[in-house]
Length: 191
Image (cartoon, rainbow, N blue to C red; front, side, top):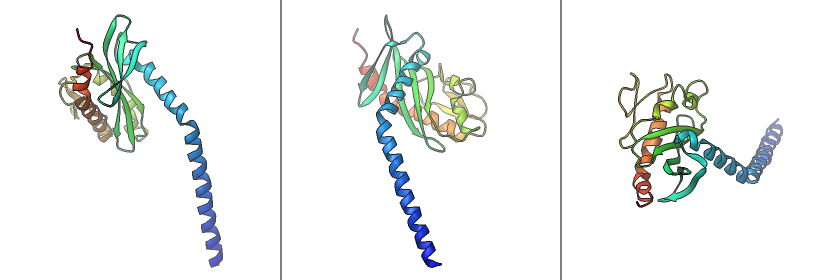
């Protein structure tokens, strides 16, 4: 009987190593394609995140060690799109934040990737329910989550049953804007 347990234990270990190695191989093989798909999705969201911008006229730049996008139209730069991420309730949340040229107003928010609880925290992806609240909010002061309905230009109404996910999104946006604001302003073309 004892030998059966040892055989089964070794079988589990061998299968774990084989399947783990296979998953690692798939990830290594597809890493470039995954990164390119994420970049393509980011570029496709630029017009929605900064109204008037086009993905063709926009360009990727590095500002203070952070990769950002100059959201531009053929006539000139209109704002910025900033990829950012942080811890949510269940796992990492990756966002794209659109801001105006002077980093005074948020122009849009897009959830690039999330693994929040389906039916609750995953509602952060819903444009009508959650993301649309960010457009027009201040980028100069920290956003706060409220449960009584947003009344000011810095309040975001929490998703019922997903307050932690709502707060995580606001925290990611606040920390990112605080970290890159000065660099974005310094990177503006001199007039």
